[in-house]
Image (cartoon, rainbow over all chains, first blue to last red; front, side, top):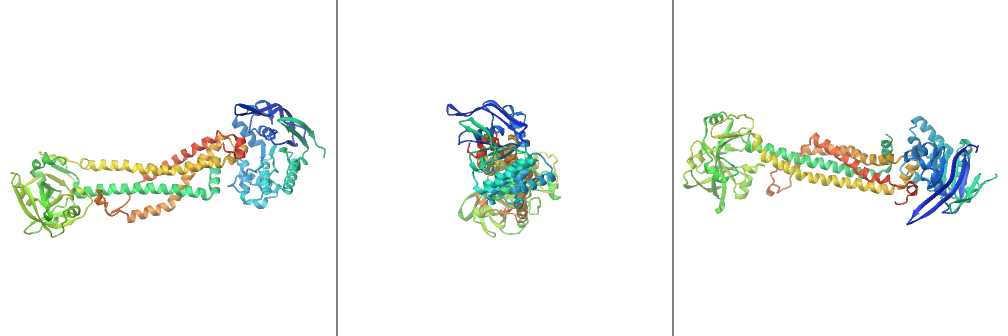
Amino acid sequence: MENKSIINVNKLTKRFPIGKGEFTALQDVNLTFGKGEFTGIVGPSGSGKTTLLNILGSLDTPTEGSAKVLNQEIGNLSAKKAAILRRRHMGFIFQTYNLLPVYTVFENVEFPLLLLNMNVTERKKAVMDALEWVGLSDKVKSRPAQLSGGECQRVAIARAMVKKPELVLADEPTANLDSENSHNILQMMERLNKELETTFIFATHDEKVIKYLRRKILLRDGKVVTDENVKK
Amino acid sequence: MLSIKLAFRNLVGAGLRTWLNVFVLSLVFILIIWHYGVIDGWNLQAKRDMKTWEVGNGQYWQNNYDPYDFFTLEESHAKIPNALLDASRQGIGTPILIHQATIYPEGRMQSILLKGIEPSQNAIAIPTEALDVSIQEIPMVIGSRMARNCKLGVGDVTTIRWRDVHGTFDAAEVKVVDIFSCNVPNVDAGQAWIPIQKLQDMMQAPGEATIFIIGEDQDMSQEIEGWKYKDLSVLMQEMDEMIKMKRVGGSFLYVVLILLAMLAIFDTQVLSVFRRQKEIGTYIALGMTRPQVVSLFTVEGGMHAILAVIVGSIYGIPFLRWQVKTGFEMPAGTDDMGLAAAETIIPAYGAGLILTTMLLIIIITTIVSYMPARKISKMNPTEAIKGKIQ
């Protein structure tokens, strides 16, 4: 595990226009991520964690430098190709879960598979497997509004994992959860990371998450301050 | 296919919000069909009544006769040609002699048109058999409008004055022997029907007539010297033009109703785009392309219209059928407002009207759904995911 590199970030800079000036969110970032990593990008608010995660997730593009994710240069991808990259190879977990409110738990988890045109039988099996991983097999017909915060985040994890992506990007996944739920979810993600060899990259400043990381990248003012493997 | 599946899922999932929109749209849909059905039914009825009561299946006009030029009336009568006399005897039609006169009901003076007609005719629906009586006064049949205006009832006697062909004034008493009710003002308002022979005598114009009406179920179009043949299309021209004008007026309501429905859909969709930004950002993050998202929202809007057609059919078909059975009762006084209408109008729904309305609503709904959905393509996904208003 953690040998083959799937992400290469080279001299990555991201600037945002603010009024007449510009704000530099990331500056000269150089990073490499291997397959099966369980890595956290940590740092205070405004340090550029989410911006980096958005670029790695092909939701945004670099201003300068390059970000090569799964052999695709993010800066050169068309909107359509970026969508296909996300659809096939990436899973997202958000701080506010971002579940589709009118869908049931089953339909939320099923959604990424519908985009992949998977046939019904395989789709149903994959969804049920994913819900079993996160322990929500009995909630298939519930809607997000009927679930607790922890359950919602478990559905979001199931949705991110259902297609068994190579890369999962999680932006502050525990920010809205209590301590117990945070640990449960992190243990679940750790287990999935080991079982499925999925690369997990977190953007977080939550100490609870940091405890679980095997690699910790500290960002401050858009620059990498430290990048260290954590001995367990 | 994916858009349809997801759109359907979104609509069903949205529950009450969807059904409220669908219900409003279906209401507009049914209202448009019903409204046009009533207008079409009204028009059909008016055309049918005009044929039955006034124009028959065509007419012959004495060469000078011009219904729009009152001053030519004195010169607009001539001996009834043999061909028309024969036709009259065979029951194909009836000659009518038209002359100007003055009536004095309750001491008031009012100009009228005296129309002489064969009491035994059956070319038009005027109940002329009532004229076949032997009384001291001249028997007269009038319509309900005329009766109301002159405050005359059956059995009332009043005076009329006229000028014969030599210009000599004369007067006589007339007695109302029957009052008919019909939707054609042209045979009613300001008109009195008396036996043609009596009118010929009064005018000193024996054997003469102004027009000849061919019976509704009869056919005749041969050329007759001194008389002009007017077929049904010419006689109905005015009515057809009026119907066209009425249609134009009616289409304003059509447009207003459709605009109202579209406004509701547009509003919902615009609101959706803003309210569902986070959802849209999530769609994009999960791998939907922007055109796919636009298509999803457009299909969602269009599907409102399709559901409206289905829901509208459920309650609309029984309602429209019931209206065809019972008809739509015109409000009292419609007749006084100058609108020739039956007391009850039976709506007529054509397949064309239903299909056009259906298609129009579906197409326009889809277009107004596309417009706000297009805005999505300009949305920044990283902001949309957070649900920040852009």
